[in-house]
Image 1 (spheres, rainbow, N blue to C red):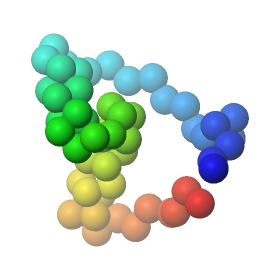
Image 2 (image 1 turned 30 degrees about the vertical axis):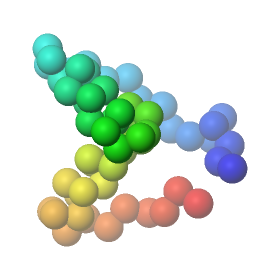
Image 3 (image 1 turned 45 degrees about the vertical axis):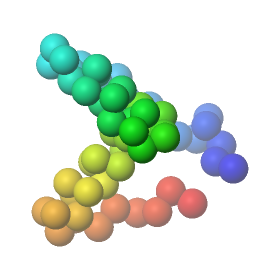
Image 4 (image 1 turned 180 degrees about the vertical axis):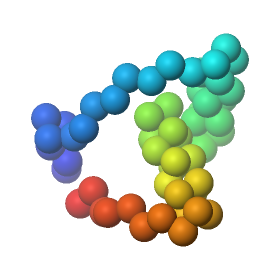
Length: 56
C-alpha cells in the first residue's frame, strides 16, 4: 500500500460541470474521482509521448 504522506498533493480548480462529469465517469469505472483524474492524465500524457514514473 502506498504511503499517503509521501504523495504529492495538488489543489485544482475545474470549470463548471467538470466535477460532475468526472464523478459520473468514475462511478462507471468503479473508481474514485481521484483515480479517474489520474487515469485521464496518464492517458493524455501517453498520447503526447510522455513517460510517467511508476508510483510503486
